[in-house]
Length: 151
Image (tube, rainbow, N blue to C red; front, side, top):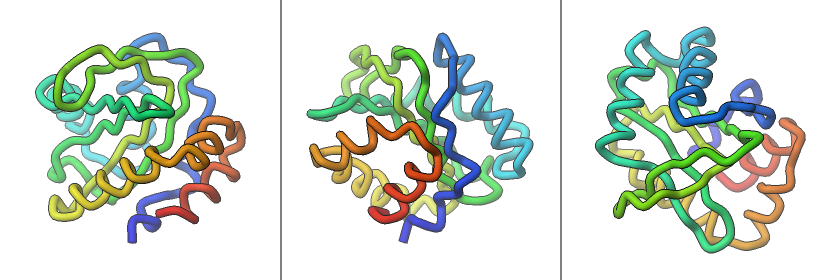
């Protein structure tokens, strides 16, 4: 169901950003250039992250699931990002600092599908074998294959 949101050209496993703002700017620029988002996406993403943090501490891997309002999304997407170093995000729910290297930027067009997608991702990232494989992948094609076979 969510597999159609995953695109081979939206997997970046070699980002080298030093902080959240730089990462959001880099991702926003790519998404804008590819036509997935409006020009107000970046501002909307930053503001929503301040109000509703998306860091997630799972048993096996910290990950962040940044997303924003459907109005700034042209086409639904999941943009998979691995950063070279950890970036401090705030934990979903309690705002504690959560260091993350792995990000899934979510472009959700239909608000009704948001809860289901987040639940599916949390389920995947609670499975040790999936997380181990996910964290070790260095190749975009292999990452696409892994995620598309589980979504």
